[in-house]
Image (cartoon, rainbow, N blue to C red):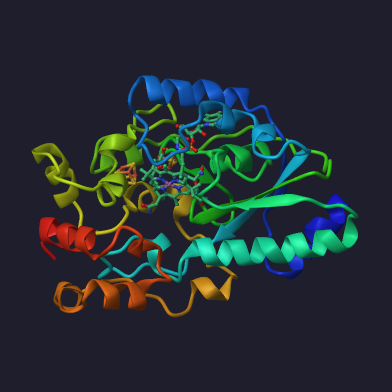
Length: 296
Ligand code: B12
Ligand code: SF4
Ligand code: SF4
């Protein structure tokens, strides 16, 4: 069944597919506990500690997790003020759609197949699941990295009740060259495969409310107003990576938002125009604030 699954995924241009066990994720529990104790988590993560570690609390009959990588690299626009992950239509929509196609296929093949789909929004660490499924290795910059696409991919998961045999994690790590540590605008990459998310520029571009002087300084170091790509751009594993085969990530791209245009749009018009973009969930006000801070 696993071979059939992987063949099917390849037929819809998904090359990286693996199986993670249905927990418990005790190695992740230790890391997560440490991040929370240091106050290095962002606050966007699942708050229920047990749900992050024990998949049975989400689906009592869970037996395995299918994990897929969705590469998104389609080139870099040097004039961009959005991070690369936000150039295309909202990845949540696309990834969910593809995972539903896989689930429909499995429903035909496996009587009584039950599943739940997650991308970004689940209780688990998607990176940890992809690592367990043997799809990539850890970067000092906290990213999960694969050989062909570097770290420019999203991770989607299908928690399910079929006992697919798990894959094995890769033994290697990144080259540990330290370039991401040097270049990070938040100076928040700690060198032990963790970051202090509260100082990460990507987090600050989404943070509501008044930013402190220190946070403003971090924001002003680079031109992006949504997300941050520095620790990926400098990484040797991301040089000469392949472009995505997923056409949806290569068409209808928006790499830059214009302040004048944003100001002209009412909130309703903004929502209507950008509702299928991942940069729009925090609303127009935060983007305008970021544009003002960054000064572009
Ligand atoms: C909250 C969140 C954020 C926060 C905090 C990020 C962070 N590093 O913790 C903020 C807003 C800062 C953020 C930023 C970004 N994010 Co984000 N984010 C998430 C989210 C929703 C939860 C992550 C989480 O639980 N963090 C807590 C930490 C402790 O867990 P973790 O990052 O998953 O991984 C840690 C452990 O898993 C650990 N680990 C686990 N097992 C093991 C084993 C070994 C041996 C080792 C060494 C380490 C290790 O390594 C990490 C150490 O802290 C996930 C989706 C999800 N549900 O998982 C997306 C996710 C991690 N984000 C993603 C992306 C694309 C980004 C950005 C690149 C976007 C951008 N361009 O701005 C940046 C990258 C910043 C960075 N250097 O990490 C992708 C990552 C894809 C990838 N290739 O790794 C994810 C998986 C979304 C998705 N489904 O595709 N994000
Ligand atoms: S996304 Fe930017 S701020 Fe966050 S860790 Fe990477 S380089 Fe640092
Ligand atoms: S820049 Fe160097 S240290 Fe940082 S993740 Fe890439 S290889 Fe590892």
